Length: 308
Ligand SMILES: Cc1cc2nc3c(=O)[nH]c(=O)nc-3n(C[C@H](O)[C@H](O)[C@H](O)COP(=O)(O)OP(=O)(O)OC[C@H]3O[C@@H](n4cnc5c(N)ncnc54)[C@H](O)[C@@H]3O)c2cc1C
Image (cartoon, rainbow, N blue to C red; front, side):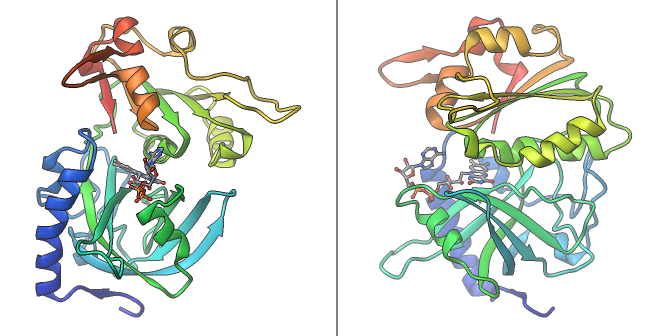
């Protein structure tokens, strides 16, 4: 395949060992070890939006060529990569992610980070990442430095939460900042699947107006599926004249907005955001002290919640 090559076996094996050790140490608890298990299905999977498989869809190490890089705001880029198999969707299913690898010159170990593709899985041949750059961010800085034609080493697809069509009537998505990517993947997959009937409420909190990435796409989905998707925006530091409500994602907001009975198996809440937001909403457990989350205070049991 032009523009794409698979890693040599030895390199892949070495990266796999270092990668799994490094990532397990570095990633937060929500990224569970079973995500590293070999994917039993090369494509789509139950609830998936009709992905195509084939050799390009199997989990493995790949080197993908960057096709285009678009600056979305001052800290976020949208990166589109060619896939090894132009007829494949890389085996992506709801909700999956990939791992990026790069080895800085002066480092002993590669930097490995998970990223969530945001492209429509029904369109084969490419994946798209939305990457927020953090100050001194090792992976995000590297990804932002890539130019069209450059190659990125990845391992994927990694199966995260296994979405099943119509498992829940009411799907609540709480996203903070760059945490919108897994939520957008779910929204797109659910709404593009004609069999899926679930109702979706997205609560999207950001720092300021420019951080409302993917808003155009969300607006289009809201217009096309007014009975199924409703988005609530909160901006903690809005610009002057901003049309958005100032504030954070609070207990009061969640109590008012979340869909469905909180004690029913037909309701699910998904959460993805910066660590402080996740701790406030989901709670945190430490050696010395534990913090109760807002969702627990509102009566949602842990099995009603999935934290990406
Ligand atoms: C399953 C999963 C999917 C993800 N998908 C995406 C995605 O699609 N797009 C995306 O941009 N990111 C995504 N992330 C986050 C991503 O994997 C990296 O953690 C992030 O890009 C920072 O990595 P870095 O190497 O650039 O920063 P690091 O070098 O690890 O850290 C640099 C600095 O940034 C701070 N920092 C790092 N992460 C955060 C954060 N989340 N909030 C606030 N400060 C932070 C650190 O505290 C540190 O000070 C995902 C994470 C998970 C677990």
